[in-house]
Image: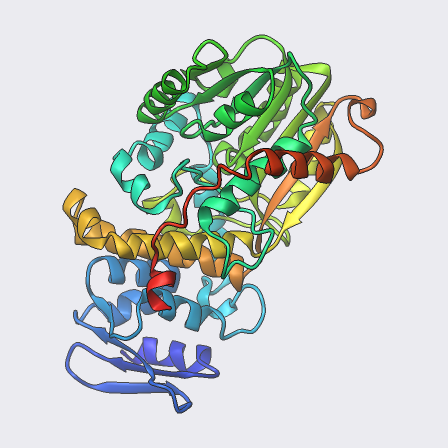
Length: 428
């Protein structure tokens, strides 16, 4: 316990944390505030050392395995947000690997993990996205948007369903779509954005992804909507797509491409896009310099995944004839999205445990809470970039984006889904 004790004494600067070790001994950190302290219990004698040796990996595993328990009325989200906000600035150094050698080793391992050849890319996609449909139904909105929602109004009074619909309008508006165009949706997920485009525009859409169950579900949705003749979905690696498209959308894909493959991504998409075409890319991003994905996330949630810095996206794309015409940093929107996903996961605890087990449920909670803190207290944002090969492809000013987004939102004014029950509503 001495190593964890040393770490917590240095890390906890305000607030009040009480840790009960496996042998019943109690340790207090910070200063009492008048509110109930945040209490955790370590149930295994190996827990303290496992956490202290590498906090990012060890803490997640200890919670998953039941070695670390957060006592009510708090939960793991409270603990993660409590610890990570201690630094008062992005990137708490106390939570990162110590020493140049360890940091270098982590970077090398992460770099190797980001090499996503076709067979590995498919396996990685299936690891994340081929989980049971029922799991995603429990915490996503009805359209299964597994990327950042766009909160145009107060997140406390805006439903996830409304925010996701507004996100699709914002993205579609930036694509400057015209009737009769062919659109490629790379990493189409469960088909929501492709079907949205087909509903609002007279266009043909081809969605591709690598998870079999996602594509099967997409095809079912297209048939049910009566647009299977205009919206096609295929189990295809984007690197194998042929033909030419007027517009390309890439939403939540670049995080899975891997930095060694950025040249291939930009070279191939440039080949696929018409000379006067537009590519719209939305991805999680770093507000600072390039970094590496922590070991816990790479191991349990997104194998092969990496969140890019803006400098990486721009410097790589410009080598293949792309011109970046618009960049928007979406701050904090994802933290509110992840908070709602967390709340809905908690709401459906029993069902998720029945689907998998307690270890999976705790893993999912840790993932969502950890991701939320990165976008709330860390240096993570979402990047939206408009790429062209010809500067004449879009209007000179950005008014077209706001005007088209407003038109799309007005057209869907009667389609906003009901506010689904969540823990936020329960707390009220």
